[in-house]
Length: 108
Image 1 (cartoon, one colour):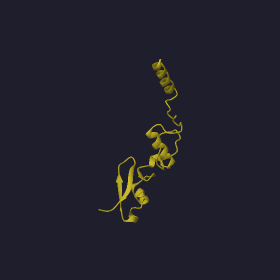
Image 2 (cartoon, rainbow, N blue to C red):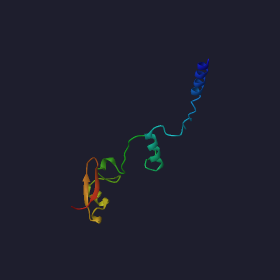
Image 3 (cartoon, rainbow, N blue to C red):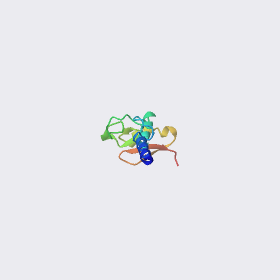
Image 4 (tube, rainbow, N blue to C red):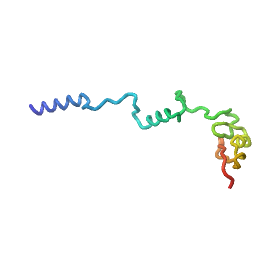
């Protein structure tokens, strides 16, 4: 009889959730979701409009051969002028392709 009473008591406690608090539905359930929310709150992510990808540079796709920041340029000369490397006594550095990234580096 005691065993039956103990089993019944344990069963009732577990059925009520064993005293564990219920999770908040507004809290993230995974680490990735928490990082995404934190980044969005800090302004590090663009607004989520439900679409992935898209053109990530400013300018026309057909004329985007060189990139300075997020701005596209048709020629290397125009991109290097926009990067203002010569004004800072630095050399224009071209890295990659499709579109190539422009940056300034100290002359060697």
